Each structure stands twice: as structure tokens, then as C-alpha cells.
Length: 634
Image (cartoon, rainbow, N blue to C red; front, side):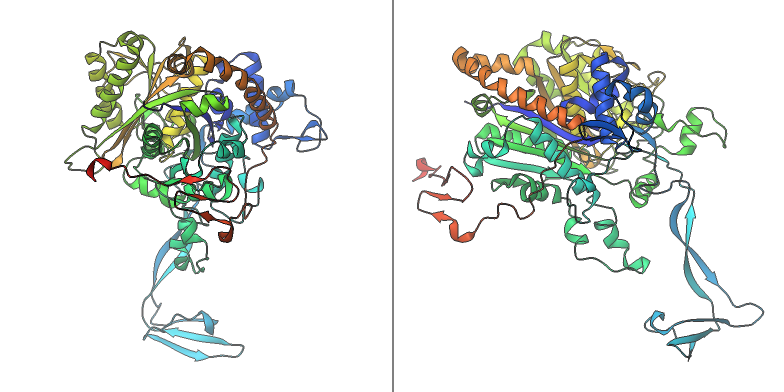
């Protein structure tokens, strides 16, 4: 009997806000929320953005004035809205109007006079160029005379043509929430996201770990670009060019596997499976697939699936920009018929399936907690949905490594066929929707919509609902599919389908005959099936079939029976109470991040090994050794 991977928690952070309890999703569909949900969303964002905080059990603003929750929207609503989702790049990252760079200059002598200057002796290049004449002066200084041209680089700035990104909410700073020790921004976000996900389950993590053998827990995570800010690889590669020294941490903390390592070492204390794979925009789904496969095979019973990318740096943006991949000022002006002096609406930089000119980079960290169905019921975990399978296929022979190919046809068709096989054609046709890759490039809108068009024709689907989260949070690269999964869970919970409000209409070249793509949010009713689709660089295509909580519980009742489900319902009461407690704390900004630096170290001398198992201190269950799986061959 194949174990069913069920989702029992999800947390994280992106431009829309916190992931747990659908805060980021609710920010996106803010104008369609009930009054209570809207008020909760504004409260959670206000504390996340450090506009208000709890002092002596009372909400206060930064000036120490008391604030009532009901007044937050009136006082801070415009600021919260302006400081979330895609917007002009803020100076916390860099100044897009005056981006630092090194201007090359060639200095020549004037009127046949040599170039002469003084400097400290220790600042001379080694070896000293042959055309330089050096004269020693007092105070360890030298006089340099150059009778030839000299090439220099001078600190300067330039007007960056790419000015928008999906940044974390303004004022959000994970570095002050724990002893972050000058860690890269992406790893700080990982600590926040992992804590948010674990606490969102309503289960004590140690209780989870003691419920299974230690090697039946796994962490599956990666970045693509890596940690490219100054404390990671970004600082490493440019330090010497800028006259700085390389630190002892930059190389190690810059690895794209480091999100996995940080979760294991500082959050969960995991000693089971550790897995990292990168697949461009499909990275989150690649790691989800590995976790799903391991749960189905019984190798893993608890999986932490994660991905992080914080790459809003001048270098990364210039790299994508020079590929003509990003929406720039000139392109946005052209789309909106603006003059060369008009400021574009940066909120609408990302326009999936509309007239567009490139994608918009985002930053984010997403973490999902999965369990096998039996364990989830045993622990009373709150079940948000399930992932029956994730499909991955490449594109075959290509001319350009970034061009699309046939792989995504395979993944989407397999996913639709699986859903139809599980729930029937009527559910697929009437109660399924697509979380599109929707990168907002002219080529993507044509090629991706054609895939959906052909699959819809095959399965006789009309008005197939399509939404595209990158319109709001940008393209976060590695965790992009995690953003999509978070939105899918929000739709299952709230029955509000996010429209693509950044477009006026669908572009004429989009294959939309069988698709329902709207530019406003709408009530979609109960949805049973979500397809998380990624159409990545290099032929990294992946699609996940995700089923709603309602359908998942029906499946579990069929498998496990009424008695087990009644016991589960009783246990779930306490779990829901714990979830509500954490949600209340998180909405007030009281996150208490899990960061176990050196806490719970395992002493080698306390490890006990016999011929059948190994027992580690701190874990109730022993790890049983594998029996001969090839008995038929001996």
C-alpha cells in the first residue's frame, strides 16, 4: 500500500508577507476578503514590517503611541500596501537610480608632462609597473611619476534600467529576530521560513521526531543562484576587485545547498535524509518530488521541503537584464505609451499572459511540512492537502539552452491524467485550476498557454482556471513553485481565485480558447485539484498534482475507516488550538525563531550501536538497519 504524502504545515516569506495561515495569499486578494480577514491581514503585516509592536500587552507605533487593531488599516494601510508586493527597488538592496559600479578610465599625460601623484608606500601595486618611477618620501609615503598612459577604475554610479523587484515587505528584518551572526539574507530568511512552517503545524517538533525512527525524517531544499549578497558568494567574488579581503564565511555560506544545512543544523536537528537538488525555476518542485517519492516508498515519514533565494543584487539583475529577460523601464514605457520622462507603474512590471516585456525578480523562502498519511492521522496533524505525485521531464535536444521544449507538455499531461484517474473527469473539468509558471515574458505567454490549450482539448476542459502568482511577488527563481503552492492552499481555504490584476487584457497571441484567465479576483467555489507548474530554464520542467484538504480527508477515511478518523478528529482539536495560538502570536510579531546554535549536540561517546540498530541520544527510537532486500537472489 503506497503511503500518501499529506501537507500538514507551510511557512515562509515573500513580497506578499508571511506564508503561514495564508497571510501572503490574503495580501494578494486583500480587496476580496471579509472584514475580519482583512483586519487580521493588516495586523500581521504591520507587525511584520515593524510599523507596530506589542509593548506591555498593548500595540504601539514606533513613537510609543497606543494603536488599536481596528485602527491599523486607517493609520498604516497605505504604507502597508505600498511596502508589499512588486515595487520599485528599495535602497536596502541598492539604489536603482544610482547603482554603484567601477568606471574605467585611461589617464594620459598632458602637454608632455608626466602624471605625478603621491601615495602611501604600502598602497603601491606589486610588482610596480616598469613605466613608474618611485621616489621615497617622509612618513612612509612615495612620489610616483608616470610617463605613459595608465588605466584606472573609479567608483561611479549609473542609472539602472531595471528598477522593480518583488522584495520582502518594507521593514521586515529577520536578522534582528535571532543571533544571525552576519549570515547571508537568504539563510536568515530560511530560519524564519522553517520556524514559521514548523509552528504552523500546531505540533511540537520534538514530539514529531520521537514519533518515528530518526532516519525517517528528511530535509529537501536548495537555492539556484546561491547566497549572492556581500556576506555570501557575492562578496566573495568581488572582494579583491574592490580592495577588500575575503571573509572565512563567504564561500561556505554561499553554497546553494546551505538552506538544507541550516534547517538541519540550527532548526530541526535532523539526522535523517538530507537532500538538495537544483533545477532552475523548478527547484522547489524537484525537492518536493524527492520528498514525495521517499514518503511513498516508506523511506521518509516526515519531510521538510524548502527553497530560498534572495538575489536582488546589482550583479544578478544585470545578468538577467543583459539576457533581455527582465522587464526594464524602456519596455514598460513602450507598453504603456509613456514618454521618456514618465515614471512607469512598477507595481505592474510583471504581466503574465498580457502584453509584457520580461519577468521581475523576486526574493522568497518557502517551507512545506509533509507526512505520510498514517503518521498525520496518528498525531492529529491538521491536513491542508496532499501531493499524489510530482512529474519532471526534460526538453530533449535544444538550440538555445533557455528556449522552451516538449518537457512541460509531458509533465502537465501526466498531472492531468493522474488527477482524472484519481477523482474522475468531472472533477478535473469543473474543479481544477492551474498555478501557472507565468514568468511574464512574451515567449512564455505563448508557449505555456499552448500547452494548457492542448491538454484542455485532450481532457475536454473548458474555462480552465489559470492564475499566476509572479504577477504579485515576482519570480523568486528557486522557491517560485513554493510561492505557487502557498497560493494554491490559500485558494483551497478561501475559495477566492486571484486574478492577474497587473494586465488590462489577455494578449492576442495567448491560446486562451479553453482557459479562464481573468484580471480581477473572483469567487471560484470549492476547488479539488491544483496543478503547480514550472517551465524552467534549461529544460527543467515540473508539475505537481495537489489535492485539497476536503478531498484528502475523504481519501483517508476510505483507507483508514471511521474509527481511526474519529480518533484523529479528537486529537486534531488540540492541534488546531496550538495553531490558533501561534497564528495570534505571529500576527502580533512574536515569532520566537528557532535557532539551535550548538543546542543538543550529540556526543559521539553516547552513540550505541549493535548488530540490529543504532541509538542516538536525544531520540526515543533507534534506527533499525536494513534487512537483505534481495533475498530472492541469495
